[in-house]
Length: 503
Image (cartoon, rainbow, N blue to C red; front, side):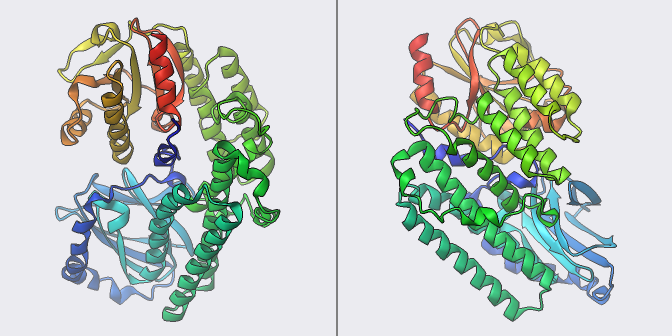
């Protein structure tokens, strides 16, 4: 049975801010305390008020409750501009020189959020990592801009639920829903402009953000009905995608912005299945986002549409990595690397991608993994064949991506109950020592009986992230049956039942 909800639980693979993961909302009640705390914290901010008018500098201070690392980073265009370390009170402060107006990324690893900075701003940041996106709050000169964008992010998250609720609506009716959402967002921007002195640069960027959220809703809707509700395709209004003629795939001002990059990603997905025959089953190569043919089309589209190096490399990295990680034949590995050579790729992952392709040869169907060694929670090194002798499905996670592994383990926990014939085994990919791995397991009460850690990981952290949704199905002898599925595959349970029937 196709699980549409799962499709959007982990729709975006964990790469930079473009594909922000969703925060845990269970702690929202705690966030009601943040305003009183901000008042108490106001004295900490007074010292930067006197320098408000500095023309080329931005002062930034803050406090983090339940910090997950010892520092924060401000970056732009994928380049870290400065790092501010937390003191004994989990506070930080510093200033950024020669700042140009625009979007920046505030990082407190492993989480991040976009902020908008202009010369002369004095920004105070407060957040609680238990609900990073819901709690983050900005105050001080210019803070209304970042707060507006932060609120847009939360509203954008709610749109996931809107898609799930309304993707079966008639296309004309759905178009009205998206029109209403855009009108509401734009009115909020007008209200902000009337109450605050915001620059024309920010107004233009926020307006673009609202437009691209609107475009993204329509792309995601079109993708869903083309793949899962084909009878609706002929009812899509002729002007439903008129905005496509207006979009830019090279907007330098938005290249750090998840809304914009998510739109490009969903546009590529939708375009890749628009020409699939409506009579084809949804699991055919044309409709499978992990198939070589589909990825080939999207890679070609990226190469022809995008000239901005950072944006282009982001998507080529992602699509080629996806092609490698989910390849089921050695020929496909060679083909996907050949495709990369034919593009104007200028990214830094050429060597890593070649290494990934070599590693993937080990995990192709028919290969036996029973002799591979892993670390157990007891500190023992064990061969896979001695850890389980039953049919198994392995999934991958890192302690540095808590929102990801919490969702993964919740999905897996449910699957264990439904399919007791299969061992679902977590493979941790932390490059560091095993301490963070063990802490994450105990902190989140994961079942230690089904946890292993990979040994001697040498690939780049960005490459490791490409594997975090990957599943490997193995028979009771440790032979790979298939490895082209993701934990967010909508019809995953159907695939599991097929796997069980073959054992």
